[in-house]
Length: 352
Image (cartoon, rainbow, N blue to C red):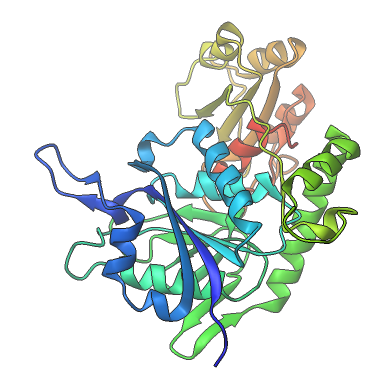
């Protein structure tokens, strides 16, 4: 009989943990109560549970990503993987943040939740938890959103539906895998390509911050209970990079938007602006609401201006239309095929 892996279960609240109250659904179930409600989990893993917060994910803050990342890094020292329960509304932001905070990851980190509380009849919570613990026990490294049988790379996930169980989509990348009745079906090609993409991002982060800093973090993140010497990144399950600055203004364009809206970033001391453009990169320059002078003014003040799209799939191509080319000439940065969640997190972490 194969020995079960030790898997950490970090609970943060969300719909999966909700109970009904006089003011609507609110998170209340603890990690132990959720584990007890899904007894088959004990057949999959030796679970080490911890409740670190119990909040509706609409109340999740960037500072909470830091706490979740830190708890995850600690758990990975002694566990073979981690499952994080989270509310669905901002899960994609947290999964993107963890993708960039948990660098050089060598074990699975899975984020999941539910569209109905674990205490409700016909909830999707039990299935999502069982699937997540299977993925966390697989040994396949990476940050993954596991939902409705889909396995999505952490910074490729976006919530597309508010009620249906198939709530999340993988944006501009195929699924990393599927959980079926017979087991996990991984797409090795997707895993390889996405792993290479993320390693490149992590390496760029490392160069920007200084290799010595990352090596210090690697040593501090290692399992000091072992008898091995820490020689580098290969000796630790993860390198924690939790540096972020939330002062990013995200602006969704709409017909009639005034340039002064963008200039709020300067008045309020933001370091970056993320513009959700029209289509494949449309930023209006027609008077009387030409946005380009405001963009140039922000950039001249040292504020980064980046452009993504409000269309969920296929990304931006600022070189295609005049309304994109002029924005490029003004100095904006294209966020290419990233989700809006990933683009926002990357600006907060200065990964551009």
